[in-house]
Image: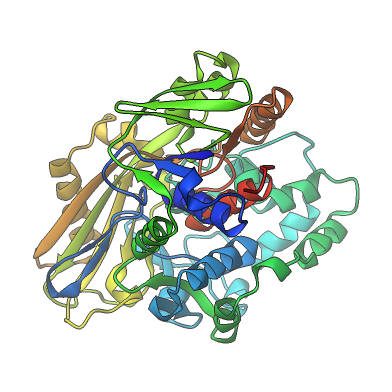
Length: 471
């Protein structure tokens, strides 16, 4: 028996991979979810005129092992014909902007543009590459994204490229997030005793084995040069289809069943909810670290403390529809560097990415995150979020009309922050579990990646590492 705790996409994927490995029949897998909703933060809402609002993730990248793994899952679930790709060359891939000094600036997208000086950068970006190869090393175990980029590429790159990027990916502060979050290989190249250029070249051209992740959908993505993709009706189709598949294969799914305690007894584990007890040989936790921590504290306070130290942030997401095309330029959208002191993280131009049948403009405005206290005193409600979204959408994009439809979502403690020291913390967490032979596997976005691909891949890898007697 195996208990999967948490019904987000990582928990659903974990149950799927258990079945695929034929470790257990579906009848011996229980999936427990505290709420009435499966899929975690993946929520898609259909509005008037078939407009889709995404309250969480909206696109998935097909790149790398993680991207290939998700494409294979999509194919296994029979969703290949539901994929909506955006290829390279589309305005949403070519036009990505930042908002600096009350103006929108396009980020460089071509080799030629690297040799041109473009505001708000101090000099052509080609000089940043030269600085990277010639700057002296600073030996350390870890560093912030901001410090590393400022040191190796220049302060303006850290300020106007990396800082807004971190806001867009994890709603975080580049001055706190570990360099290993996005630039592990470059950081390791800096720390290496080998010549910098040699290490960079070796890292860039090192090939990761992809044999286990090949699929027809992956080949199609390569041939058609997909940049990102979504699914018809929204990304929530993925967890909904996983749910249907698991039920058909006999997995027992328990909704509205918040876990009240976890007790490891002998070689097994007992999970209590408000209404029932579940005994199993192994527990797969897809809960966020801050939700798992108090459940482990009675038996394993040291492990609980490590989990508690992974911080999370709250993000406000406001979907807006304007009654006509109000955008002056097609683009993916824009991000706002924290130095601009603007109370939004950025705006995504949804109707440019995936046009609807009607001549409307659909935007998603994001706010809060690590900067919630700075702009909202730590408190953000629906009314303030909507007011902020409308004000800055109209002001920055020079829109005269008012929105004709909206949806506000306050996603409480939704994104973990991989601050400096996160890597070492993970090592201590995994070592603690291994040394004490606790029948526990951790999956989900709290540990080794915050994106959809990362969450699903963590489940694949976690299940691959479980040693269970095949029944």
